[in-house]
Amino acid sequence: MVKRKKERFFYSSEPPIDKPFNWGLMTRLFEYMSPYRKSLLPKAVIAMLLTTGIRLVVPIFIGVLTFDHAIKNKNTPLLIELITSIAVMYIVSWVANTYRIRWMNELGQLVICDIRQHLFKHIQQLSHRFFDQRSAGSILVRVINDVNSLQDLFTNGVINVLMDLILLVGIIVLMFVYSPPLALAIMVVVPLMFVISTSIRRRIRRSWQVVRARQAKINSHLNESIQGIRVTQSYTQEQENMNFFDGINNDNLLSWKQATRLNAMFRPFVDVSNAIGTVILIWYGSHLIQQGSLEMGVFVSFAFYLGMFWEPISRLGQVYNQLLVGMASSERIFEFLDERPNVAEITNPVEPDDVRGKVVFKEVEFSYDGKRKALNGIDLNIKAGETVAFVGHTGSGKSTIANLICRFYDATSGSVEIDDIPIKHLKLESLRQQVSIVLQDTFIFSGTIMENIRFGRPGASDEEVQRAAEAVGANLFINKLKDGYHTEVEERGNVLSVGERQLLSFARALLANPRILILDEATASIDTVTEVNIQKALKTLLAGRTAIIVAHRLSTIREADSIIVLDHGNIIEQGSHEELMELEKEYYRLVLSQFKRLEVG
Ligand SMILES: Nc1ncnc2c1ncn2[C@@H]1O[C@H](COP(=O)(O)OP(=O)(O)OP(=O)(O)O)[C@@H](O)[C@H]1O
Image 1 (tube, rainbow, N blue to C red):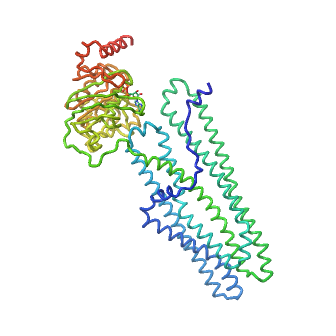
Image 2 (image 1 turned 90 degrees about the vertical axis):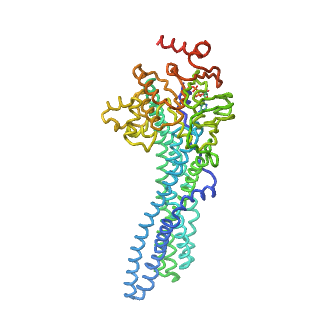
């Protein structure tokens, strides 16, 4: 029993991110910054240099110059000058820093927006095979979570690394210039602190990684639960679902606790490092002052530098983490971006001006997985304007034929031709403009009914949309809705009935006005009134175009010019309804069995 539960709720987790640093990946990632090379990037760098430069010299002004020159020599004008300069420097630094942060955030957001746009555009072009192999949830995680996790790297990582390096090197150099022995004494503890800080950081990073993995699990489960809510409720599996959710939700809480506990250790550690440095400074610095080998002003400057010292060190450790996280995410993003559509367009594809709608299959074989054949040497010749229906047992290959005509997949061997041109030679856009498919499960997008129909031809006017709806009789139910054509329907259109959705998709297809229409008929049983409405709508829809019907209800296809019976990917019978009934073979048996089912029902 327990084993079954585990199997049902299996979600693959993201791979670990402890991989060696990869320059190639990083270079590719940072190329996304190149559009801003001449605008935001240099502005942010200049602002950063200004802030960093001022931060480095201010301690000298406060310590060495104020104490050892102005105060020691009782030079009041110099003191006033110094105080004014320090005030001006603070103001300039504050303004520059404000702009640095603003520009860096802007740059980060723009880069993230570009990456997401690129990824979305690319994913939209990928073939069905890509989507067959992945769940919607896992694609979502990459477009949202992985891209988000690059945000830190772009907003803070890049410029901050440069800033921290300059700051750190600057502080060390200045400390050594003013007092090598004191600088050395303070530096003694640096390697140890660096090692400890990096190790804490590593543990923090790993713990956040666990948090992310558990959150991804919650997302996947939530996604599946919402999508499958009807099934869950009808099998009263709510409790089991809830128990599982409880488990992963608790795991997530525990991982959060662990991560925040480690996180909480970090700031105090920086404070302790600071304190150790301060103790060394006071102890050894006062010793040097008493000896006469250190000026008071230098001591003060050192105190300031010490305050600034640990910040870049701790941030640099963080940047390395950000780089590793960014690398893992970019690796996953690039994996999608490197995915090529299986149905690629040839160079210089044919763009026919006028398609008549003849469809020919020559010795077509097809397999989805390279092992099991879904179609076996299919030969077909569908004349322009003909209505051809495909029937056969479930899994016999009917939808596969439709998939190949739309070129959602390429035939493994043989060729599919439209008007004697192999579809591989056609421009995909022209092909898909001429071939429309009305699927079993009509997808309704969130938006109004009007917009959903207009999806068939985005340039269509409101009147054209209404005419299409009227032609298929969809206006009858649309007019009854509170807001008519402007009624909002949610994603997947759950508020509409199966029949209404089907009529909507007919109107959509009619508006698109393709030469070849493929109708993957809905299997759901609908009442006779709707059935009659749909039959009427179909007549309008199919008139004057080549129609390919993947038929589940045999009553729909009596009037087809030709009926093709498929069995395990082979054509076993072909002819008109009357001819096939006379044969008394597979079609005859299918019709009889359907009638029997109806009688029993
Ligand atoms: N995306 C896919 N990946 C792998 N195999 C698939 C895929 N789609 C269909 N198949 C397999 O290919 C074969 C033919 O499927 P197809 O969908 O064409 O059947 P069908 O006749 O339309 O069935 P139904 O009447 O149930 O819709 C089946 O064995 C099916 O399991």
